[in-house]
Image (cartoon, rainbow, N blue to C red; front, side, top):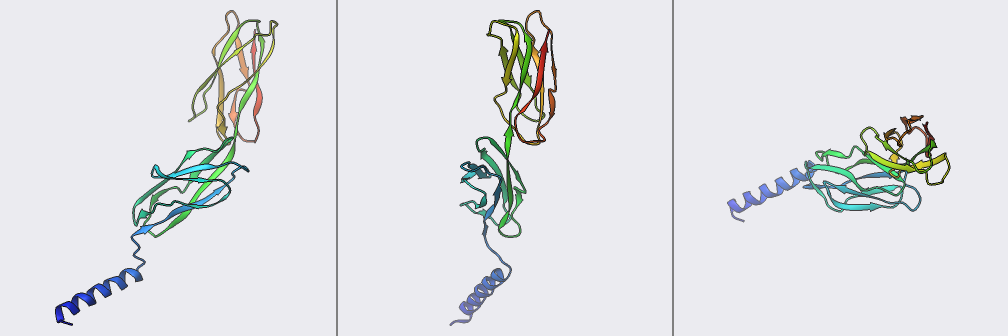
Length: 202
């Protein structure tokens, strides 16, 4: 072997060994653990807005596509499971130290907001609004079509996650009546539907 070729060969070999000794992988895998999924439910996750993966049980997961060593990753929920809300922790950063398997996805049951409108006159309607902090505002029209003044149940359709807050108020009162809500704000601290909201109309 000629001296120049020998030097190039030895340089390539030593470089390869150095990279291997330092753990010099060019790409890394991103994954973690999903917990709290209901039986039969599934959650779809994405990394950096792509490479969707659907997890159908409490289990470990990893994305098919790799991330370049030192590159950024950002794991988010693309599709929530029915009746639950999943939150990602430790889901974003830079893969500077090899494979990442500490992404946690925790799922909890969502909570509905319900209650009763009392004293609403026959044929009248009232508009309620739920304005949760950091959530989506939802309006709901409650009408008394029973022909008699009485108690009218209501239920907001948009569920919110455990640990979130609710705040229900009167947006549009019925003509000729004043309505006052009670038990209408708080935090989802227990499982189950909030059913203690009352709106009294006079």
